[in-house]
Length: 221
Image 1 (cartoon, rainbow, N blue to C red):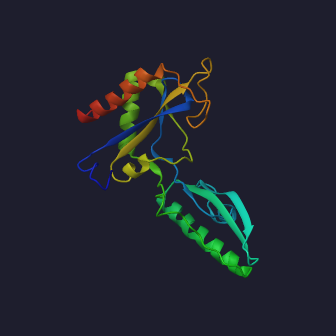
Image 2: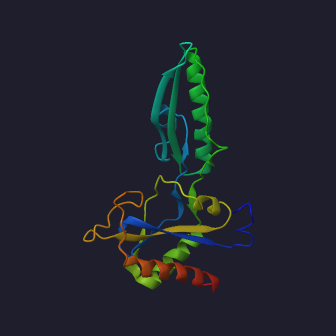
Image 3: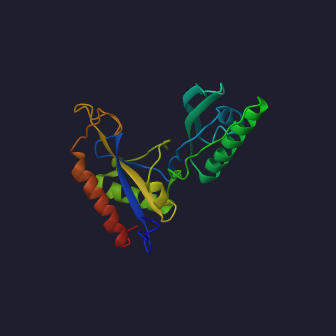
């Protein structure tokens, strides 16, 4: 969509997502990095434990191991996993170090290794970063529309989001509307087979999203 010109002459962009962690009709967001980058990769845990600043949240996880042998007796092991970071700088540093560590550690044991980030088959997702001004606009509109206690600053999450590509091109704000209602059983993540939505949030989300767009266009805030 970006390559086809969908964001040409676009000044701002907003995204709304439901959240099972926020009570129904509560709006949540945060300025700056909100969601992390994600890609299937090969990795070692030592990169995080030994090299990363503990105040800079990053994740490197090996999630699959598949060992087999060829007809000539050679052993083959395939490791799969994921890595995530809250900034492009640390993300690409992780990418570089993962490739370096895997290849060089294999060489120590007289083995060979290759690293595939599947960049041709599946684009690596950058972090979703909220523009300070767009975030503040969302916060103001949510407060005016729903009341002062209706907005919460949420913690960053290690998820990945298509919207991240837009936030690299246009000043953006990604925010949540709560759907959590324990009486109804609306307590599960949207990726759970038990997910259900408190439908009382539907008019709230629609009104909030429309008001955010309308007030931006008329120069509110």
